[in-house]
Image 1 (tube, rainbow, N blue to C red):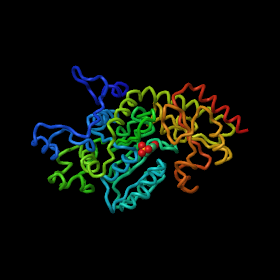
Image 2 (image 1 turned 135 degrees about the vertical axis):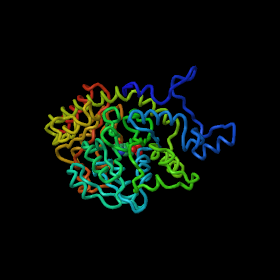
Image 3 (image 1 turned 45 degrees about the vertical axis):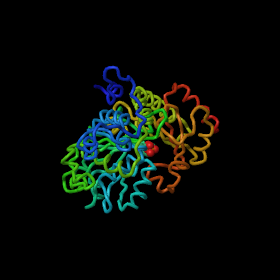
Length: 422
Ligand SMILES: *Cc1c(COP(=O)(O)O)cnc(C)c1O
């Protein structure tokens, strides 16, 4: 099946007389005929549902769909994108370990990696993802256990050379984790370029309608965990009668472990109702992404022609330093988000936003409605100017998320706002 068909037909597959639409199993609990069966569930020897924190039929259908869209062997939905990033790392790293992350990542992920993981004794080194492989290799340490980056960074709009990062990771026997939130699997499937684990904030385009906060982790099934660096996946787990994830679950070892250890102990499971909203959003992902992209490309070209705009960051523009990488990894399109720098910095960027009538000021991106945000005074306000620059953000930078309205209406609103700036 092509992805346009998968979004509609993967996951939930109704049998004779069953509902056409994915049912919402709003139940914490499930009923059984025998204690023997329940015992098998707890031993992880029988498949099935026993508690919605660990698995639920509605959530399960969405997980299967997303795994299929990304080309993975399994997926785990979480209650937010932040929980997905947290679990994805914590599933393989422990106190005393280190990982490498691109510095061009989402502000919330920067906080998680730099500050919260530090409290767990997990250390991160942020690197310039555009450095050549030999330079990046210098940041690898004895205890480095993972490499992390975003396909198209929020909000820097840089495009990652995924194959270079995969080589960096694999040369050092560690997995590559990719946050693929902005392109979605419609525009890029990082596993095809060597990523081992893919995560998403499903809050963004996957949902698309701003209905739910959610995240997902997808396991490619390709990484060999039995290389001496990941004892947690190989050695016996005393909490499940000494099973070894690699031995018992083979290529699904990583994603099963994330579910039965981390989701069991830390929670962060999505509500079935939210999984339903997410599933509905996914069904129209391809048609929405095409419109988001064509609108954003038109807006980016419009912005480039404005005297009041110093710079436009959009990998779809031929002037973008990431155009070549975008052509390679995202030939059909990349995302609907643009960032641009307003002449006059912080104050004029804010003034422009305040003039807009249709485009709304929101702490969100990837919605079907066009929205705008000023990172320096909102999502990234905890960073000083120097730290902002490291993330590819300047004080006058504006992040514009193009929705799926008619392009003429979006351009008209921008035109009147620039005119009002004077
Ligand atoms: C929003 C976002 C996150 C965090 O996801 P939440 O669902 O808000 O917790 C992580 N990565 C990227 C790229 C994001 O845009």
